[in-house]
Amino acid sequence: MIALGAAGALATLGAALAPLAALATVHHLFFVVFLLGGLTRLAASMTPLPRHTPPSLPDAELPAYTIIAPLYREAEVLPELIENLCAIDYPRDRLQALIVLEADDETTRAVARALDLPSFVQVLVVPPGTPRTKPRACNHALERARGELLVIYDAEDMPDPGQLREAAARFAASDPRLACLQAPLRIEDPGFSLFLPSQFRLEYAAHFEVLLPALARWGLVFPLGGTSNHFKVAALRRIGAWDAYNVTEDADVGFRLAAAGYHLGVIERPTWETAPTTGAQWFPQRARWIKGHMQTLAVHARGPVPRQARNALALGLTLAQSVASSHLHGPVMTVAVALALVDFMPDASLAIPPWDLVLYVLGWGAAAIAGARGVMRAGGQPRWLHLLGMPLYWLCQSAAAVKALYQFITAPHRWDKTLHAPRSGRPGA
Image (cartoon, rainbow, N blue to C red):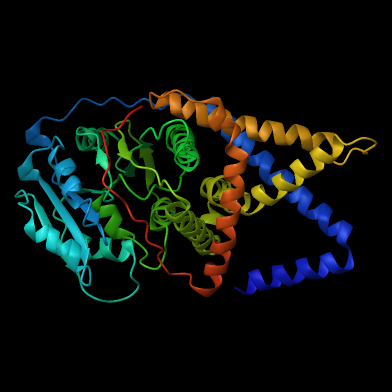
């Protein structure tokens, strides 16, 4: 808080006393952030997928597995979640699924009581308390977890039936310091005309199919997704489990595992999710993510991570770059487009330096390559119109970043709930 206040005061003072110098400073900062992000995406796009194909374990050797699915106001999707959990290919005598509900969510609790739950599924109710967050619910469930391995699923998730078996085989064949495996999250094809779902799909494809596998192959830690992370329970308990006050507990726990000497990896079998279809769904979710990344960055900048070279590099390439780009991409790109339009006016002098124009084109190109490659790795076909719409999506992210910054100061632990509706059909490419 003090650092943010000091930075804001200095920025205001600099803009008042030397506006041209302040503008040049912001320009150089954006240049570095945008260039770093573009180069990282290009390098990740050219990095082959890590290939790990350990032999499947026979049923007798499979470890006990716990599934934790925290829900809040998810009555409509609970039956579908139970159906998806029942489709998982894993011995039922080694499988425990904990559906975690909040004490005041009587509607979802009533639906759970009305369902004929399979024997491996148990409903837990989190006692009233604060903070009201997903990680607090997960910590409550972890106390009752019987498995050696554990995975988190969200209400709308449809995991590949063989995902648990793949993760168990990887853990058995890998270095004992491997503590977590992230499955790719794939967004169902939203169709051609929907802006937010199509951009959300591109973003997930670039992140989970391109960036995270590359970071794993480079031996770097990465911010985990909020679902489909498979943990060794002993390692998770050793680091104190999830931070109940962090609204992106997934990003935080990955860096805490790395700081404790553990490794992260990725697996191939995906989890299908649905995309937010309206701004009312997307905006609070994105603001929460950005706020959580700011929280995690602030926490780990003061911890052991900066003293560990590889982890510090990963922190800069992921969370720091994400926070900076969320706040800078939209406004700067808007100014750049406006100045570019001025350049086409008669008798207009060049408003944008040539190197900046090159950077904008390369930055969009790197993001488009990563998104397109991710969609193809997921078995889909990228569309040019969606790729061209990415700068507009960045502007939306910057609008969410304003809310994130405000909440980071005024309500850092508030969890803005994302509501989900039952999927209308099976996942597509």
